[in-house]
Image (cartoon, rainbow over the protein chains, first blue to last red):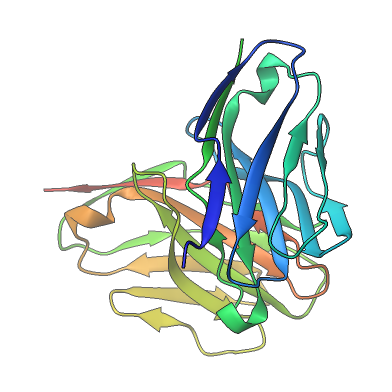
Length: 113
Length: 114
């Protein structure tokens, strides 16, 4: 049972490049989330999804896009990367059976130079 | 929109002493979940304690307990008999049972001193 798997673990992008952060969970959780955590700061919600085909904006959605075609996968797309998107990105999932306790991936450290 | 506020950026406590971390939140909903998570230097998020808003009884997990004041929208965490391993960032979180939105506070960095 792998839990929540994020790839890649590290990435360096040049300004203006695009990339997709992958997130997959094998716990059959309905709800999935993307957060960013800047150094020494809290987690800010980027986007979330309550099921396949349903996504919604969080607190800081600008510059990002998501899709949820399956229950398991919730990729985060960065278009036209900017230095302000340098951060650690966490994917998380939960459902009522898990008492809505969030299970987190190990994170992706992204630098935009 | 829901918000979660942690007004103490940093705190320290002597080993074996008790410390209380504050959290306030804002919501118009009547039912929701509240959580405290711990993030050690490894960056892995670990659940500390969970509270359901419709339950008046305060949650307790071993040395960790909460003071949940629904009318005041306050959700503080008390750590008793602090241990060096409690050193970490602590985040308060809110989950809406209507939208399933999950919001975290800015965190309190706790240092337990030997």
